[in-house]
Every structure is written in C-alpha cells, then in structure tokens.
Image (cartoon, rainbow, N blue to C red; front, side, top):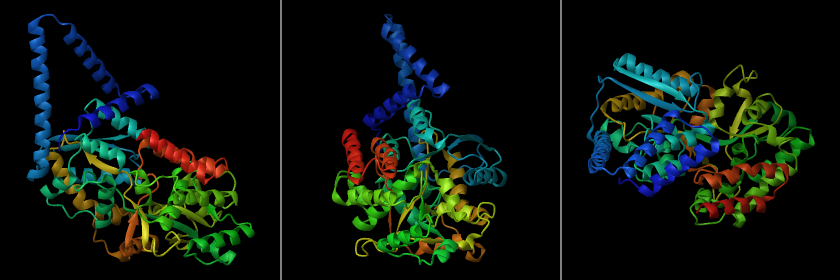
Length: 486
C-alpha cells in the first residue's frame, strides 16, 4: 500500500495539536521534534554548498533507510520468514494494567514464548490510560516511533493508520506464519467491517456480544418474566417501578453504556447497518429512526427507569448494583461474565444472573438472533519494526491465546479454541452458546464515528439522561459535529 501523505499529515497535525492542548507528551517525541526543527533551520540558513550537499546526503540516506525498513517489514509479512531464535526486544503498549486479566494474558503468554521457544527474546510492557491512548499514538506517529505491538481503536482511528501505511497487513502476516485460520469467523468479520478493508490490519483481544443482564431473584420477587420484545421490556420496567424496584442501571458517568441503549433500539428498529449508514453519510442522524431511538432513552430516563443521578454512576458501580439486587437489569457486554463468576463480586452466585439479547422491535428488521458484537480494543503491529523475530512471537501468540485465555480465565478472546465446554462456568457457557447461534451482528453506536462526532454523541447523552436534551436535540448535536468534521 502506498503511503498516503495527506492522512499522515492529518495524524501529525493531530499529534501537535493534542500536545499543545494537553500540555504534555513524550520527552522522546519532544526532543525529536526539537532536533528536527533545529536541523531544518540550519539547512535553510547554510550558505556553503558543501553544507547543503551534506544535508541532502543525510536526508537521502535517512529516506533510503526508512524505505528499506518498510520494504523489509512488508517482505517479512508476506514471505513466511519466522525466526524463533533471534535476539530481539519488543515494546508492547497496552491500556490494561499488568495485574488485570488482559494484562496477565499478554504478559504470561509472552513469557511462555520466551521460556518455551525463544530465550533470546525479551519485551517491555508499557501501560497507557485508555483516555490518553489516542494522543499517545498520534504523538508516536508524529515521531515515527510506533511500538512493535500496540493497542488501538478499531474503526476510523485504525483506518487512518492503514491509509498512512503504518501498520502490518495482518492477513498477510498470518498467512506467512501458517495461522490464517487462527481467528474465530465472527471476530474476523467484525474487524473487517470496522476497517472497511479486504485484509485484516488488526488482531482481536476479545469477542463480546451485548444485551441485557437481569437479576433472577429480583425478577422472581416482582413476578415478571424475561421480555422478548421491546414493548414487553417497557411493560416489565413499569411493573418493577410500581413495586419500588429500580428497573435498570446504566453507567451514565462513563457515557458509552447509555449510548449503547440508543444503539439497541436503533438497530432493532432500523437494521444492523443503521449507525454505519449515518456515519458514512448515507443517512443523517436527524432522520426519524435515529431521533426515535434517542427519544426512547430520554423517555425511559424521564420515567425514572434508571433511578436518581444516573450520570454520576459509572459502569462498574452499575454492574455492582445488578449483582447486589439494587436494580433488575443492566445493558452490558459479555466481558461482564468474569465479574458474575467471581464469588467476591457476586456472592449470590452466577446462577442468579441471566442474559437476554436485546428485545425485538420488528423481527423482519432485526431478528432475535442478531447481536451487537465487538472485539474490544485491538492489537496492531508497527510495519516499520515488524521482522522475522516478531513473526515468531506472533505465530506463538495467535496459536495459543484461544485455549490459554479460556482454560485459565474462561475468557473468549476472538481466537479459536478447543477447550472442553464441561470446564466452563454456566455464564460463559451460555454466552458461548449465544455466540454460536448468532445469525447476524451489528456494531455499537460510535463504531464508525470520527472523533468529533463520537465526542458529541457521548458528551450529550448525559444531557439526555438529565432531561436537558430530547431525542431531536441530541441527534441534531451529533449531526452538527458530523457536518463540521466532514
């Protein structure tokens, strides 16, 4: 793929702007920028022809070196070159603390590769807060120093890196190491849809379906049944509310859990490609269907379904409320299953929590077996730094993570596994069954949005919860941000 200089300029400009606004950044990037500025100034003011020639030769050599590295990486990705004895140290940049489930899986598997395969291999694990990830990556792009392996956001952010020719073609790389079938089909399909490419340029680190979780004891006490249609959901909410039971919790402080509810009604009433159409300009967020979805959430909030102060509740707190019986239902993803299976967070036991897909609005538009899915944040590989030694690590990682994550953490990571289902807990087993029976998938509300549109969608959902915006005003704010960005 040719380097897209326009996209690269946008990424560099974004990094410079982010650095000025945030007032912070990588010292390495700063010193690199300072050195570059100094070199440019010196070259411009030099009157000696020998100095100009020298500068030209240095620039030419640097360009040749960079081009050679890119060609080498592309050749490695497609040639099948794997070196499992080479001495190399890679950097892994991730948004998960080392003691989190995700951090443990990454570190433990990489250490197993060193212990079992290549003792000459080493790595550095760097944590960055999720809120700082976009700025961090933009800064590293600007300084031409992306780490060997890094976590990023699928969709628009990744598309920019692909167009700038910064990341490895994962399809080629997996083919080259003999692991082209390592991913679960649903994960591969989701990633390709988000990147809008024929080849993969990212690796999954999860495979989640989303829907409503419910507390069985609360349902039984209130005498309500699991709803299968949206009208039944509203009826259940009314019955729960009349008995003094909070029907739903939502992590309004985190914003995204509530936009998921807008998306839930939108795709059930408009089809799985609803948000994609609005995000690529085929439709407008102010069209009737989107406004109706936003107004649905506004009405649910005004009726008190989410309780008091929903904008101050984060998603972890909302999950705790469901587990402790402080509410009856919660919209969340299958990542929640680890907390459900943990006796410390769920003393009532995992059998007390059930999962249901998003209730149907119109079966002919979106059937019950169609779920919102995602692969979480994704892994990318720096094209410049990819080589045969990294290919050896990649081969081991993708061929082992499916079983390792399932056997040790009962976690589906988007890779094939052959773990005996009898070893799985009831919650994970139910999720696996739903994934296997799914006939269709959709993305989440912000999946295809650019950063400006995403910010408007997330920031203003709190105004919807507080009653400061209705569905029309909320959708107008999103469309306005989209128009400005495009």
